[in-house]
Length: 108
Image 1 (tube, rainbow, N blue to C red):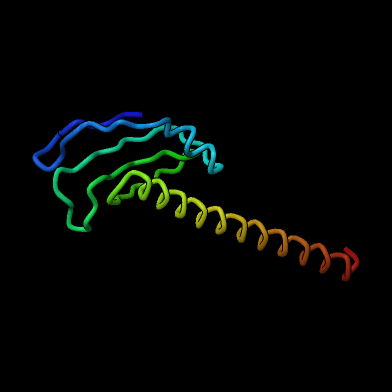
Image 2 (image 1 turned 45 degrees about the vertical axis):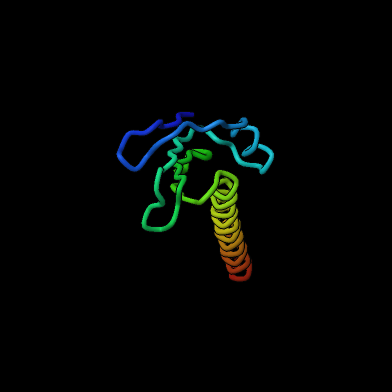
């Protein structure tokens, strides 16, 4: 985990973090790394804190007004992606079953 401490004119400050890895683990996510930046002024989207997160090998980039909001947004995006993966696996299973039933019906 890295924390930027003012690398541009719009970034500033130092961030006191609890254990982000434990926070993400409690939500069922495996955090492999992150980079968090605190902005001295809100960006064009109104975010004052931004982050890049590597969760189980997938990168997520988000911005928010506070760290808890940022974590909640990353978690929501992760849940959305997990639902998509489940739907794809379900569809693949259904296709496999349909092919097997078609082969069985034709006697192959």
